[in-house]
Image 1 (tube, helix red, strand yellow):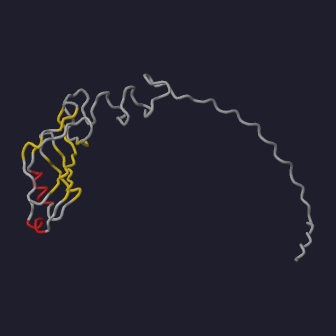
Image 2: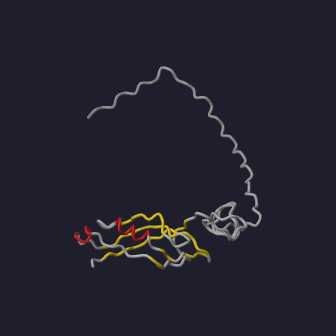
Length: 177
């Protein structure tokens, strides 16, 4: 067992200066309350934002017009131009007015291709399709599917009583003849 080494006493002893006295706590600054928003709701509204409008919509645009439409013109009753909405609640499903189903290619027939293809297109207010893109392909069938869709015409999608352009997903199921 090892013995502890003797502690050496210091040659010089220093006196510690007086401990600094604790400062008196500073008074808290007066609380500044947010300026009252004219027409605001006391206590706020769940999902509301500062500067929002009473009766506004969660996710709406600050400075927007109550009952207005994104991209719309103040005072105008015309639908906004070049706005493509995602297809959703409150919209009618489009029905095909004219067009054909995709025709099997020789390669797809030889490979006995069957299954589900998913295509996303914009249905314009006149019912024509643009900007079609494959989300899920089937071997040897992409071009045939896109060609068939480009020739189709649908009933316009209506939202709030007006025809609108929408991003729409088509599920196309192919079965061998």
